[in-house]
Image (tube, rainbow, N blue to C red; front, side):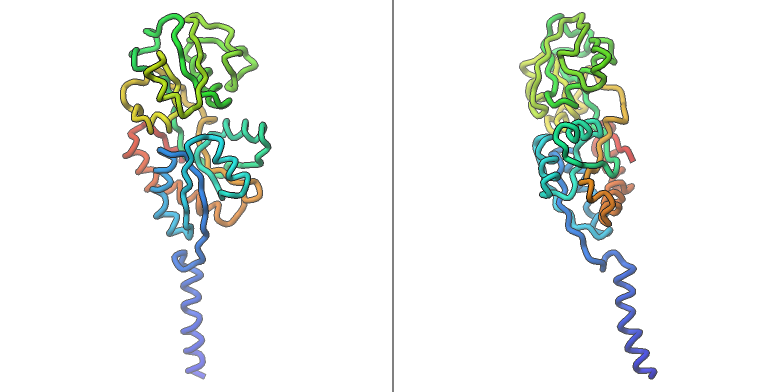
Amino acid sequence: MKRRALLQTSFLLPLTLIASNPAFASVKRLRIGVTSGPHADILRAALPVAKKNGLDIKIVEFQDYVSPNEALAAGDLDANIFQTESYLGLMNKQRRYGLVPVGRTITLPLAFYSNRYKSFSQVPQGARIGIPNDPSSEGRALYALQDAGIIKLRPSAGREGSPLDVISNPKKLKFVELDPAQTARSLPDLDVSAVNGNYAFLAGIMGSGKAILYEKPASLYINHIVVREKDRNAVWVKPLVKSYQDASVRDFIRKTYRGGVVANF
């Protein structure tokens, strides 16, 4: 009897260890889409924590804002991390993706950059201003100009306006709508360009002193971890959010971007 009890104890002990230790638990493999730049680099910083939490993450990088949602909605990704709640809402409305935010990540402030001027007060009449052409970022850029008293939008436009919604433009600024990835590259050809934070980082202009106007902070522009509606309560979602929001990841953001990227967790 003692020998049998000993054998049973010896058999049950490893099972107890496996059940209680994430390192021995079954690993969940995830494919997560991000845009190149800070979103990709920050997720890489979270990989060691994710591994301890039982997640094996493959990072899939994109160069645009459309493909990550298309891939997620099609089931080619398990999650993506690149977009604000404002942008997600517009895309769900327009394309019926059925995607939901499950955890906050970072804010990448949008700013207006110039190679020619040190402040917006120096920008002349009729200046050419580059703005992103996706609906969310375009409205975001124009709203920032309105906040700064440079233009005025019709009240119904809110934060989703286009150049057609501009009702007051004392400087007679000419808006040039560009693919978001091209806004930073347009600086040699334009007077000013509004650039999303991830593209500013990739272009090497974040923190360069070329920013002449920053948008005011708004919760709508916080980025999120996004999944399909059917996966909202999947067992791997909480470990994913916990891994990303770890203190070590927050420290990485603070040390790497020195205020150019804001951790919202």
